[in-house]
Picture: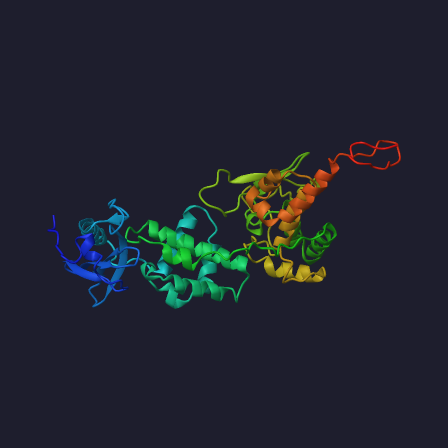
Length: 410
C-alpha cells in the first residue's frame, strides 16, 4: 500500500478554510505524474485530480467535495486521506486503458453503439453531429463548461425551432450521461445539466392538423405520382404511424380477413427496451387488398419504392413535398408527420379514449396530453355539455326563472 502524503495546508478542514477562495487549486504530489488538489470555494472546497499525460501536459477533474462543512461519506464527500485513496484508485484503473477521459466525439460514438445494441433510432446522434463544431467534438467531457454548452445551444435556435433544439440537447445530454456512467472519473455532470438546459415552453405547437378532405386530396395526389407512393401515404394517413415504422413493415405483418389489421413495428423512440415489438392497427378491407402480396416472401418489405427497392427512413421526404405542393399545401409546413398528427386528433374528436389513441399511435398518454391538449379540451367540453342538467321541462315552452333556478314559476 502506498504511503499517505501529509500536508499541513490540506489535511485538516480548519487549515483548508484559511486558504483564499480561488479558481486555481492548491496541489500536492501524490505519485509520479499524479497530483491531488484542493480548490477553495465560498460554500466549501472540492478535491481535484491532476494526471500528467507524458506529453508535457495534463488533465484535471473534480473527484468529490471536501468535508469542509459536511461529514465525509467516502463517496461524494471526502476527507483528505480518502481523496488521496481515490486519486490512486482512479489512476490504477487507468493503467489498463486510456490516460484521458473521452472526448465529446467519442461519447457520441459510444452512444450510437449503445442505441444500435438496444435497437433504438441512431438519427438522434446524426442530428447532433450535423450541428456540433469540431472544437466542441474534440473536447474532453471532463473539461466542458456550462457557458460553452449554453452558447452552442443558443446558436442552434438560429437554425431550428425551440422544440428541435430541445430534442438535440436532450440527445447530447444522453450521450454525455452514458459516458459519465462508464467513467468513474466524471464526478459532476453540472456542465451539461446547466449548459444544455431545455428551453421552457418549447413544446412543438407547429403540429399541422389537416381536415379529412385535405388528407384525401394528398392521398389522391400521391397515387397520381405512383402506386407505391400512394400506398405509403395512405398507410401514414390511416394508421398514423411514423414513416420510420412504415418502412419496417414486412409482408407477414399484414393480417388479412374480415377485420384486417397491420402488426405495426414499435418505434425506436423512448428509453429502455420496449415490452412489445409490434402492436395491432386496424385498416380497411380495400387497403388490405391493395397491400396484399401473396407471391412475396414473408420477410419482404410490405411497401416498396417505384423501383422495387425498400423505402428508407428519409427518402419519402422529397416525393411528399411534390405531393403537398400538388395538393395546394405548403411543403415547408405540411410534411408526412402532418398525417400522423391529423390521425391522432381525428380519433380524439371521435371520442376514442386517450389511452386507446396513445396505444394505437405508439406513444404515451402524457405525450398526447402535452401535444394535443387543446383538442382534448375541446372534446371534453363537448362531452360535458352533452351531460349538462337541462332545466327546461320536456315538451313545454321555456318558463321564466324566478329566484332559485331550480324552481320554475308559472
